[in-house]
Length: 549
Image: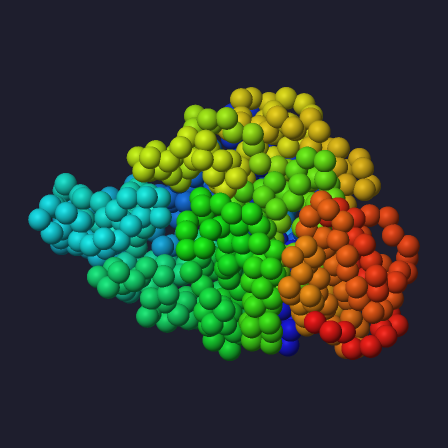
């Protein structure tokens, strides 16, 4: 049954269209720019492209505020460009995963433009409206971007709910007519030939605002089962839901095949290993490797035979992993390969964010004027009002801001890193002359070719696609090691997360499959000393005895 699901051997590549490649010199990436780089994505070996939103949008939240679900934003091209892009991808054996943003629309979407006109408008109930209390919002629910989740509307004297920007009013999923409009739209894109959907903050659609329930509401899974039934179910598509608040029990509910909901979810437990306990993402602490290992192992073991994991370090919402948990200076190449090994060695579908495959780094921000993202700007002013020091705020922003992921893709060492012939919409990282795709393609030992090998291994080796995960040395604070086993074959993955050498022992010989340092083809793993950020995948041969955890 497992092998029938094509996406279990696939690797997904996320494209943030605004920052990928500009074909017409206006400084904004576009669909034809992406098309011009399909050869590069084919060379890497990815077979699914997740496209962040390309729909028409006022861009209050970088396209996640959609004003027309059926169109393409003029800055990205036309529907004809989109059709040609889908067609060419199909010819190359690449599937398109569209970003589905259906928790909210833009306040400039025709539905909301109508809904705010009067309380008896047919579209009124597509959104969530409440009366305030003595000139105050209906309750204390907060927006993820700061402040109240309720915005007063002068037209009717009521408040509407927005869990994100005030220009992103939340849809009312209890309204059956609204849901049918969503099914119609999804089926339109399926008819266009897309291969799946990545569903933005999908765990919020079941919200019950009067009870202050935001995520994992009582009707959430009922809505997803209806979505599956009415749209993509049985059509061989791939679906992944973004679920910030999910635990492993939720993960099984979403992804167990017999429940007919989604194929997998993005959960973010592992990405909190450098966040102070009980705090927001801006409250920094050093990486806790034991916590990271425990989070990954928990999800690997809980979903075994029950659901499916998505595997990721980066996205448009996260900083660059080589700067976050690697070493983006003297060990950039080694640590980027180590982080890739850790992730791609596990069971699940891996996701690569544009530029990750060449080791792009965080941007050297110098002040709040460098930041464009609404979340970053709001956080700065919020923490200023709280009396936080400028240096402390900037340290958090430089480490965790989403802006780090959104600088233009670094193609070569020419003007604007080869991203555009014009003026780029956002700053290009000044290290583009050293870190770019052209250099990576010319160097057979580059991060790019290491990723290419990991991608091909997943397609070629059943043990990597389907083997059972087992964590080794869970208390080790320097080394992340685990095995994958299937049909009598065992692979060992060993990764040193730090620049200092680290010891590791495993009573067996190993045939080296892949490593980020030069190795003997067969090596004794009983008393190894791992070099800075050293990583390897070995096939276990001649194991001496049952290994102790």
